[in-house]
Structures are given as structure tokens and as C-alpha cells.
Length: 78
Image 1 (cartoon, rainbow, N blue to C red):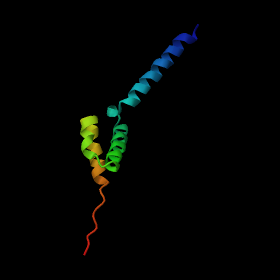
Image 2 (cartoon, helix red, strand yellow; image 1 turned 90 degrees about the vertical axis):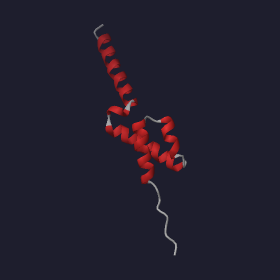
Image 3 (cartoon, helix red, strand yellow; image 1 turned 90 degrees about the horizontal axis):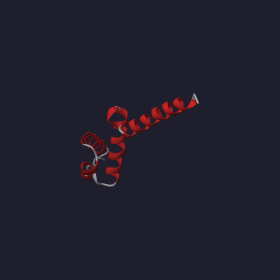
Image 4 (cartoon, rainbow, N blue to C red; image 1 turned 135 degrees about the horizontal axis):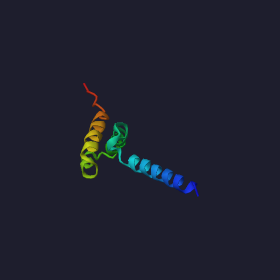
């Protein structure tokens, strides 16, 4: 009988951690990781302009910077 409150407490703690992991806005490292993944995907798909349509503005801005950093400079031909 003493285990039920403890199990409920652990379940509630685990659920809060899972919900926080899904919302990276509070953790700069998670926000940066999300932006890196979206920026890389957008660059590989050559669809950087679509970032604004499905990401929060802060993530879209960072993802765009990541995609820009992945630009390969054109070699000069002489």
C-alpha cells in the first residue's frame, strides 16, 4: 500500500521530463540541436525557404543559419 503514492510520484516526474524533452525552447542545447537537424535536412533537400512554414520562428532562424553555413563556395575558374 505504501508503494502506490511512490509509483504515482515517479510516474508524474517521468511524464514531466518527457514533456520537457519535447519542448526544447527552455534548453538552449536542445534548441540548437533541433535547428541543426532541420537546417541540415533543408540544405540537403534544397528547401531552405520551407523552414519558416513548419518551425517556430526562433528555430527557423537558427536552422537557416546552419543551412547557410553549409554552403559550399563555388571554385573560381580561370
